[in-house]
Length: 257
Length: 238
Image (tube, rainbow over the protein chains, first blue to last red):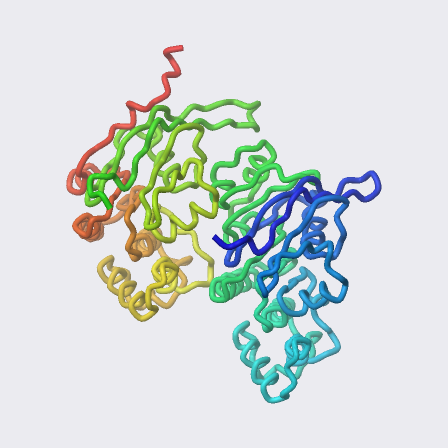
């Protein structure tokens, strides 16, 4: 069996004497979707920042298998190497699309920019690929020259996804990707994400506090509380047969429509 | 493969629930569960409601944890013990070897019925055109009107959703198919259609493990009945 795409071991982060997260360990392979769930302040976002190399851990390691097969510890990467990974092999979908998009640049430019960062130069090709991606995320191609400021929340989020996936990354981080959207818009986005993830064989690490989102998107769940992973396993096992007191509380607190 | 080996072998399995929200109350479900299911047979779990039939099925599928024992599934790439397997192994087994038909459909709200049904076949790598043909065939046999196929099943009646779910569960070719009351609340014509589908699976060499409350259906499909009251935890004996 091939090595995991990403392998976290003993990941710990202290902010002074306040704990961010502690002793987190897991593997993820291509094609797997891992959900990190827990309430605000449980350490989910800290963990996502550590995994994506945006924050240095106090201790522990994140090994990543590069496209050439070499396994590198993210901590040892130079800033330039890390930025290159972010431009090519990784995606990062923020809850707030304005963080992941350039709001002053057209939709086509937002998608094209990622392509140019990996060396695309031919205007016609870039434009064609941007059009193709807008279609894939269900944005009318006729709106390609508009800026994201003219888009609705759901459209912005879909544009952010197109911008992230256009370079065919292998690993995508998502931070509450459906948070703040209307329920009907959420459903459409979830459906779209599910299809793209399956078609492209992406590995996804998605942070969410919404267990329904975790159920629909993920294969596996890690439940975090006070900086620690208190329960992990198959998504339906964790949600249908939660073992830990806190997980039972989370599952029993879901509102049924 | 040795034809005598079972597809599913359950050995000494025990299960209880600990309800932390109720002061750590422990609710025993079953213990010493042991049975086998071979290719081409339909083993039916029998016993009154609450005896643990559904829990046993869920432990085999992997969405209930197992306290003790072994659940060996002879899959396409060797034997996997679901009781101890890593999530990745269970997922691989569900793609390649196991199918599950529950009473309730759980899907993404916006996906069309035909796509819902095709998904497990596509996940096994079946050609999309062939998957579509099979899905249409199953939906027809289960009397789901063609005008509904392009719509998401979320707004369908309970019975229609259930039949979509049966089609979804039956489409892939799997060695082991788990059936959790697939005929509950279906009318006679659709019950008969499901019985036919089950018979076809048996003839094709699939091992089936199911729960059927409908005695008529049970008698028609069951090769053997395993009475789960024999696995009840002896709460009173202590």
